[in-house]
Length: 115
Image 1: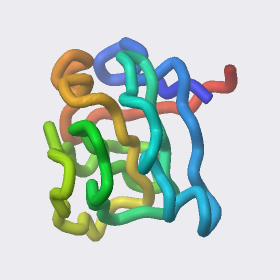
Image 2 (image 1 turned 180 degrees about the vertical axis):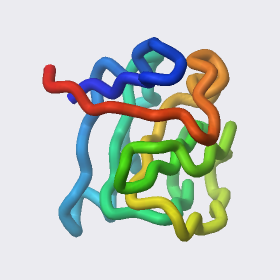
Image 3 (image 1 turned 120 degrees about the vertical axis):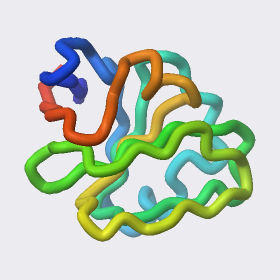
């Protein structure tokens, strides 16, 4: 899947892995190679994340059921624990700096597109 930021009129992620069952959500990006620009992991359902056992920092985009950005966590470091975002239905994890590079911010409308 690809994720497009309709508000900013640019691709947020052109290669997105999806974690939506118990095991893939539990593992997330643990043991994964660092994400490159344009790569992401979508975890659903999800209202909060941690970076335990991670080897690289992440930007976390919290998104509601309507694909609207409700919070952005920049540069979450390994071993950090983020605060839960009640309005979130899922998260998109990206390489640190990607949220800023794509100018993604609270209120942006995102859209999933098939690859």
